[in-house]
Length: 292
Ligand code: SF4
Ligand code: SF4
Image (cartoon, rainbow, N blue to C red; front, side):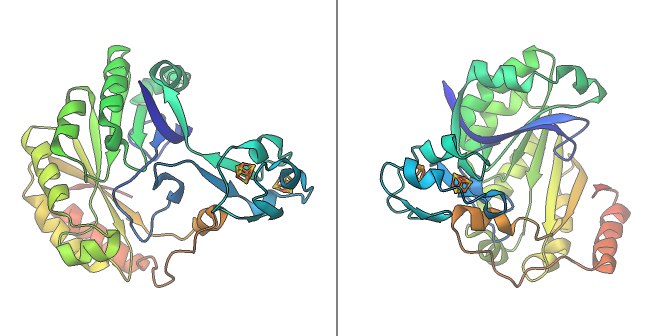
């Protein structure tokens, strides 16, 4: 069996406890307006072009078998077949393929390379995109990692069938569960999708005793006012002791440009320090352990 991923981050420190290796699976059912990993949204392979790296040598133009590159960075994506030839010949790594398949053995070898660094509580995190769109593959890998004594975490947006959670539950030490809004209309505006299934799955994980850390992005202009609703909802879940508050930042726009996509809307911003600290204090006052 193979998985479909777009990146593996080694020595990650923001994707769960300790030093971790994070695997980014490709494909996501949500379209969050602030998505920081646009290369993980679709299941298909994509070509990225990074202008700052290009040395304008023109090698890619000559190598493209379908004439999709008219000049450096000018890619006709409607005829590009994602063959990868331009990526292979680019001397400056200005072109990159987003998306590749891995077998269970290949991935196991890659994520266990740093096993010696996992002693501090670290381990392996499956993220994305949405890793649980590939739940069967994830379950097999997580089972294998647990058998090898490695701590496992699943970072999920929650919009998958409950059976996906059932498949990975026995082999997952921690779920990093994204929560963006309780109000369905706000959620739809932020992500393009309804949140009923997301809330149901979070409640399910709580009720079966899963170890949960809820991750809340705070984006002014979109979901900032939802923090009270989220606090009230999370108080009703007895297994949720830890929340991670993420302040919006816009350091990812170049990824959209590299994919040839239009940039996200400009009406997003980070909460002020005061707003962020007030929210943090409110969660702390209600007994939550708050990570930032
Ligand atoms: S991936 Fe292949 S088809 Fe697409 S631009 Fe590069 S060489 Fe051309
Ligand atoms: S091969 Fe690479 S460096 Fe040369 S023009 Fe193409 S993208 Fe730029």
